[in-house]
Figure 1 (cartoon, helix red, strand yellow):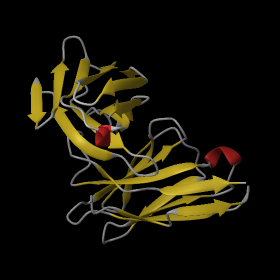
Figure 2 (cartoon, each protein chain N blue to C red):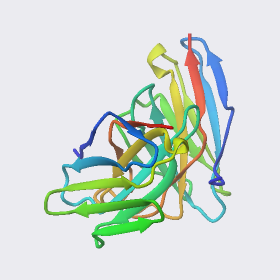
Figure 3 (cartoon, each protein chain N blue to C red):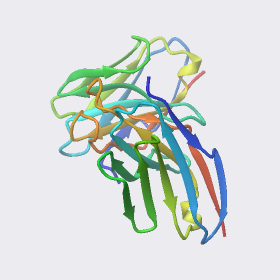
Length: 114
Length: 114
């Protein structure tokens, strides 16, 4: 158990809809990152939040957005869903934002867009 | 940008044999190299990591070696057991950009035959 919890575990949405995924970071971790993992692929970095501010972003369009709250929990929002957004969305927490900090993943949220 | 190549894509061994998975990275500034095990339907689980100031690290049956000159690192699993069967991902991160984001390899599906 990593202490990183995500919800919901599975969900199905229709193309064009919006989705919000939630994550509670491990106790003591102030940094949360989100990754997208397509079937058969390695995770791809979406963005990172540190102390409620976005601290870096991967190659994802603006319809992917996020929030971090004072308790370091986080949300990932995706607007105008597309079929290609179907994937496992992983939340990861770490005790800091710098390279070298150990990163722990949650079990993920499986999103299917139909 | 940073790229991580992982080989082989699939690996089948007999129980008790050793398994070796190799990764190469492109950015010489990379300084952190974790390995994750992902079982079907679950999130990636950190199994071992190594930082650039260390050449080798061992934890029971698992070891990782790092060759900074050649820019490659390897995972070694000895005395494999059926429960080691999973997908293994290597990853790398570097301090540039101050995000510590992980760049993942494509994954290796390890099958341990009883």
